[in-house]
Length: 213
Image (cartoon, rainbow, N blue to C red):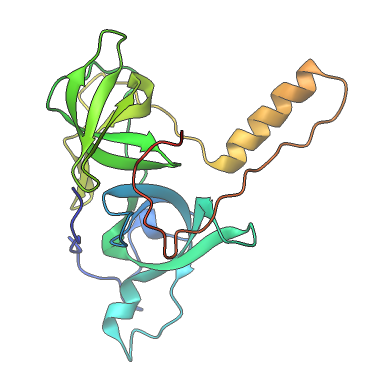
């Protein structure tokens, strides 16, 4: 499962701009070393480089203010945190079609994030059992809830997408809401306001990948 990641490139400084995936407005995935969230990746948007001056603290130049897409504060607003660049990466690629197999390392989508695990069994219904080492749980997932586990190393994905593979175009929540609203308005003459579900922030949470009953 996830361990504390080290930056694999020289840190950004005031004289050297951040890499493309850390530019303001970029969509990223965020890992956490907080208890209950190790081994997970949540999506968010880069707001800006953290305000601390790199002249007084060189390591601060590699911190970024991030706004999560799915995690909200208790007040119902998108959660913002300052995150080190070593825990940030672009949105991981995902094939539109893939045949998963036993013992393959995957990310399983649960609790609004991607969790690192290992396939332990293919079931008769076409689903898979995935084991999470951090929480020592085994849960069932369908194929469309899984993606091959990849690492972002020196600006490239390991393993890379195979030649000819089609990649899923991931949508950020704002795009999903726009699509849902457009579909509803097409099917009904009444204007419909989409509902945004509230989620608590993860401060102090010990929540693992367990599925809701």
